[in-house]
Image (cartoon, rainbow, N blue to C red):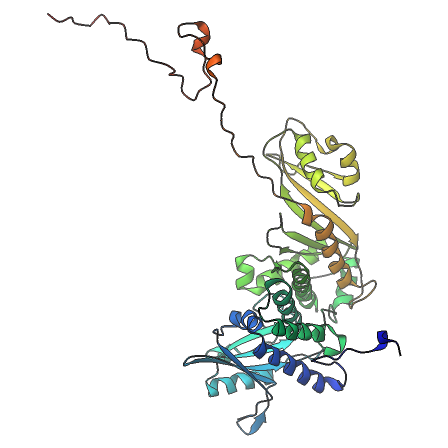
Length: 461
């Protein structure tokens, strides 16, 4: 038998998974075991949730009695450091299984009774805004116990970034973390990617196309929420490839109140048929903004960049074109004019490469900024695969970053140069006409002539 057909032994096998219950049990056990074994990984995952640095102990299916019922949370994490300890219950869902309000509120009550600090949920649900929980919970249950949520995509991203970019000191622990990554990336693990725009996607999409969508239509809030969740998933996926934390851009009001962001997206979808949002990539020249135009059937990714503050208009255009060496000819380049509200010009990169002056409306006016945009066909299906909306957004983000944004740099003024000092041969004799001009910072070269006596001068004696 050829060795190519042999299956390598794995620490966490995907074979033998039968049903959702076995899938959840194995995913929980694998994750918690690796958390207790790999110090760098448990710090990366648990520190943002309030856990101290210390010894991590993990257990699965710990029994508790609450009221007249017996409960078995999927896991329990205890972090100990000296006399201090931090304990959290863990509830896990895999596949398309969703968290339920009744179960989580029971676990919050158990945690409060036992004096635990938190309840952590892990599922494939991705909240529209980071820090927001996907399940509606009575706020009174959260007075003494914190509730945290991690998506499987977020767990996988943290694992990849720790192993491939931040590093794990112990080689054996690094191998163990790699085994968890391989397991979570396997389709049988139940740690799925973002794969559905929701039940209301088709009806809302058709209403946008017909021009009949209203702000109070049923399902519109679900669609805008799923779009924001898609932006978060796209950020996590891009961050795994870049080895850095990529996050959606939100205003302070939107971060404090998710309803503000949802209302803005709803209004945008009704008025223009568009959904848009931006993501922040550390050290990138600009935010990457994604706009899905459901009427035009296009996904557009763009970046706004300040133009240089010196040089002629064509010089500034050439500065941008030189950076777009890997961009396709179909990229759209726009420029905005300073002190001219609404004055812009736009051309395809193909034309700008041939003639940079085609973007210059008026050579006497200053170019203030550039916008570089890439448009691709938008998928319409609610799920994943060919012709799907999700895939068209994800592929558009990846293509724009790789061919455009990755090459862009922010303009910075050159440092000031030292003014040259004239040589002795260049200095003329005092008293000549040439000696009146000077290249030094001060015009007081040489000794100052004596002041002539004035009419009011008095002589001694």
